[in-house]
Image (cartoon, rainbow, N blue to C red; front, side, top):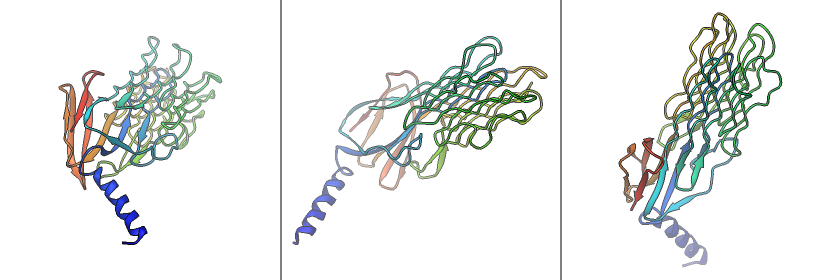
Length: 308
């Protein structure tokens, strides 16, 4: 056998072993919970951090390094959503982190509110700035997970709030905040790890005062911002989308929307077995040579999956 053939045969067998016995070749997508939208002319919530080795990661990053797992017990946590801001009472909150083994995605940053707090939160993707709040900094995104939130407008009549950052783009990218409208949430990233293309981790839309045009939520589960007196949209469950911002005080100020919960998805060769602790909610399906596990909720931060 020629030397090149021997080398190819050895390389093929080395790769094949990861599909027939441990260590198992493992693909993953880990999305954190989205940040809540700010209340009262608020900014949109930032999307949860987005990390994967099965396609493009968040923040413009390439696919992460390959992962091979031996038989053992591994941590799995699905990040919960951030709460929306309550008018004249409380600021919104960041989403919670999602974890798979050593992979941690940061919860999305909260959108800023008027009247309480001092600015938007940093996170997987950053929160948007509240309307008519000068030059307060926007929330920043975590490197290789997401983008920053958008700036707001100081111009009447809308005093548009900034859109929350998404995994694929900065808040306000598709529509800037202005005196006529709120900023759009940044779009998320699409993945085919489950066998179908699904976009996740979009930012929440910014608010407006009165009946102007509020910011739309970013593709991938971002909640829409609200007009004055309107209801802000929540981030979509299990997408890590940011919450939409609550409207201004014409005719009445409203609360921000909650973010969307995160999700942990991983794929193992069908020969492997995954057994979950009691507080894990999950489904699985065979896709090609792999069984894909989608974990949609964990009751504690101590839940596990045992791989054998």
